[in-house]
Image (tube, rainbow, N blue to C red; front, side):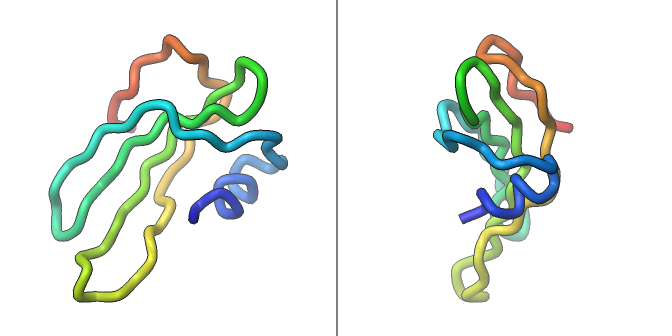
Length: 77
């Protein structure tokens, strides 16, 4: 649901977009840190906010880190 926004913020199109790891944090909704494989050995880290269900709103991409690798730790940014 956030691929188009991730591509826009990164300034390029991704050949692949597969989540391989995630962490979550309960807030007034849910924050997700997600490691995504975007092609070859290239990964990005995403911070996505999911509003509470009763709000009926879609997930929102808050931040992206590019040029990541499979063995990079998934830490808040």
